[in-house]
Image (cartoon, rainbow, N blue to C red; front, side, top):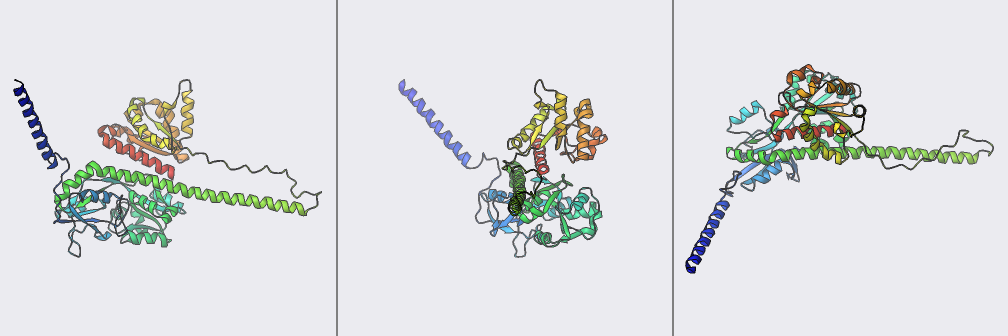
Length: 489
């Protein structure tokens, strides 16, 4: 009897071992993998093209693709599955599949704007764009000492014909200026590539602005000290929406690249954009601090010379006469540590939309923790406080107003009588910034309201209520980035 029981246990053990071996074989063979992969073929070589001057999307340094860029992350993922060779693409040949030396590209990575015309041309060669990996928009960088040009470009007003706006030939910003901003046609200074354009910005005093994607402009300001010290980004909101994609010449790679973008690539690009904002803020802060230090040194030097001159004059004069009949000035106090600058952000919302407020607070909390912003909404009002007075104080000191716009928002008498008018007046008179997010369908009411003159973070036709959690997160993240831009400006 015992022998039979032992035999059953041995058989069960052998069965379990067999199952484990089979499962291990299936797992190692790739059957359970989610990302599309093929065995690495060392005999077949694929060519990965990238643009050399498009930070943070792609950049060539030390004769190779710079690590940390979007294209580097994509290439690093692909080379684990395929044998790839890197190929730097001249700007004006960025959509050319076959190179002069006979090389046929399989991938073209760069800040490529997705347009219907470009897609049609690619599809004629059995190629196509990937899915969108980042959405940006056009902005200018304008010389800081040309405030009238900045004002004109922000309000789409004409500027003197002798002043030039730099743009690269054949790009989507070039098309945008020709088709929608015809008042600047006489001001266009057209360059063939980014390298020659950057030289023009530094050497030609008649060039006062440059139009391209905001993402690339921030990359330039981070990388180039001269541009950072002499140019600034305008306007506050992008002029349009520009979707970027990877050019895929080899259909075999379409699925694997799109899957990587969907699962990793968009997050990589959004993190790079956040890093740009933080670096730009840090560099601009250091520059401002240096200017303040130089000014303080000059003031203290002048004070020291004044006291030295006064002491010598007193020694030279008879003791009965006073060169300075006025009372002696008090000693100059030792400078204290600079007080941390706070930036008040007033959030206006309907209590029925409190769930959206709580989501927004999550994205603003890291900025508050670093002392970059001072958020205020009515959850800050404690028991016993005079709530109307607290709200009025916050309104009076608001630099940025974030409006969570919905049908409930427009239905609130208090918001529309007590909160919204002083915020709009501050925007008109004192330059306060209005940032609005559309929560639910309210297009008709919005268009009839005074808020219609302000650009929203998301379209009234695409409210948050129609978005999934990932899309909502993108809107709130864009709001955080806009807040940092306003604070930095």
